[in-house]
Length: 226
Image 1 (cartoon, rainbow, N blue to C red):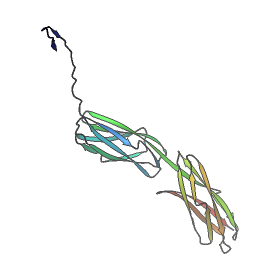
Image 2 (image 1 turned 60 degrees about the horizontal axis):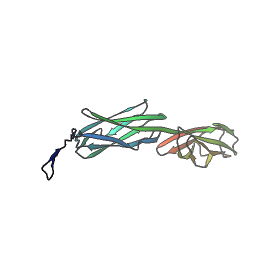
Image 3 (image 1 turned 45 degrees about the vertical axis):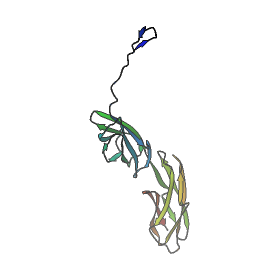
Image 4 (image 1 turned 90 degrees about the vertical axis):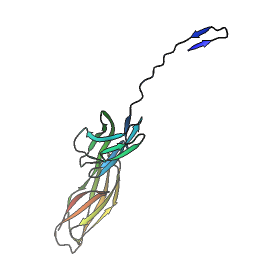
């Protein structure tokens, strides 16, 4: 740059400006939610989002990996096409019968470009037991069994209880018929079993089932009527 003053004197200054190459087209990947709690035997899902950066356009293929076996993962669609400044989504669904905590990595690949996002998946459950699980009743009398529930791996929720009898001459009732479990907590319900006077001596079965959503666990009590 040259500057002239009124006396025709001039001064010259030089400044170097470095101009880097323009940013290369790329994409970003993210998951929402980034952590899931799923009841064993059921399923849960997370939305994986891709976003075009700096004019990227092209096909991105998704792949998954976990830190341990036992978790089934399905992402649909598994291949996404991005347009410049656009976005696309895939739903990754997780199922497992095995209690545990899994670290899942979802990776998007397009040519030499590869980016990953993490999802923490915790599989929880509850257990059901009877104490005692075998009783003896004189016909015309009653007995009470404790139905005990426990949270496993942080399960929290309300378990609905139902009972079924193997004979119309065995009458049963549950109190309460719903038990709410705190994470890693316990709860119980009282199962009252009555053998009517006309009940024929013998062995009968009473089954108590605990249900949360589509998942059920059962316990059977043996009733000996004398």
